[in-house]
Image (cartoon, rainbow, N blue to C red):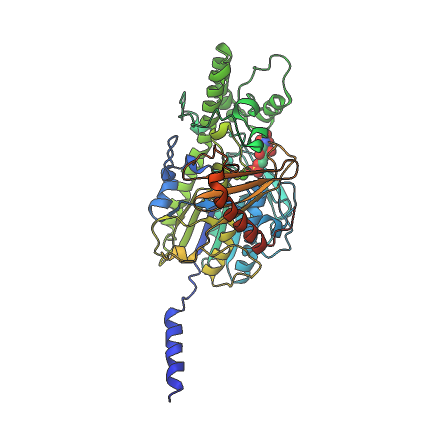
Length: 507
Ligand code: SGN
Ligand code: CA
């Protein structure tokens, strides 16, 4: 009897603390290059996103969400595998995804989930682990995009963001309602060259956006930042990026020729007519008073942001359509809805567009979640999370033990409203794609809640240290400042420990 009581007590305790897997539906919406600076819920000063904000208002907003490698295909590989780039083998956009690896869609499928992916894929090998996939080849097209579906390529007339949303809703309508599902909706927008839907041409007309305080950065003390080729002023093209035609005179540049070819060969006559009406008048106004110097710099920023934000308007509107569908189908209660981006982006900060650097604007992503019942977290989550955490999170929710090889951490305790005392206190980051477009040098680094240490290596050898509290825009490299010697020592130790923990090979 004496022995039976403790066993009985233990069993009782176990049954009380054991959480039944929720097995909710999962809808993961990911855009391509959507900066948190352009999301209403994050305090955007340049646009509003009421439908994205609805996810945050009814759920949670992650204040510190990051990627492990700020570029498209590696970010997608990290999402699928729950591993850093060196561990999943997908370190840059040129790689081909090794689809024989363990991924969360495969494991969800084995656990009885229906899985689907619609939209941008960018991993070269065919998707595996999905019951249904309909993907854009490569970067995809904003207008009349091609889709690859079960080995067949076909073109669909319309605007990519709307078509991808239509396809998502159609798939939801046709699915087997007896089983939970995981649907990945991967938009092309707002990727370069920022081609808006003709519906959104009246937005931001003639707008003058606030100029980031770092727009005219001269990169003192930051060697790699000075060497990049992603400057709005120097590298952004008037033609394909800003849609100004005729500025080249008679000798059209290759990019202008490509842009015109796209308008003439990809668009329908109606789309082209609406497009030309909009951009011919913008081009004429530009050519009539050709701005120069600082006024050209500001003109380019405003023109860039106008089109970038117009493409986001369509993402917001279509996300609203998807949320409305979930509501009307009675799916809100048992579906986890996530909105995020494959990485952050520069909207003129440091004078830039594009991403790649470990600096805050491209390292961070927006991350909003609307939770299924009974997950009870609400409002802000401030713990540092990273895109390698999605896979273990989805698996835990589905009642599947995440494989030991996954390096991310399940976010489920945070979604339950708990504040785990031992949450990670530092993040590891590593960017590899050099030499390549935009000329961002290879680098890796560590970020804590207050400091960041970055090592640019290979062709250059430069260390940077930032105090994010004193210098949130990362303008002052403190690596040679004796007052920060102790901080630097601790960060180097932390970095070495993370590289050991994640088994990062020596460069
Ligand atoms: C294209 C863009 C680049 C961008 C890469 C990677 N150039 O090559 O500006 O950095 O994609 O983007 S473009 O002239 O073709 O638009 S990613 O999101 O796929 O990583
Ligand atoms: Ca991207």
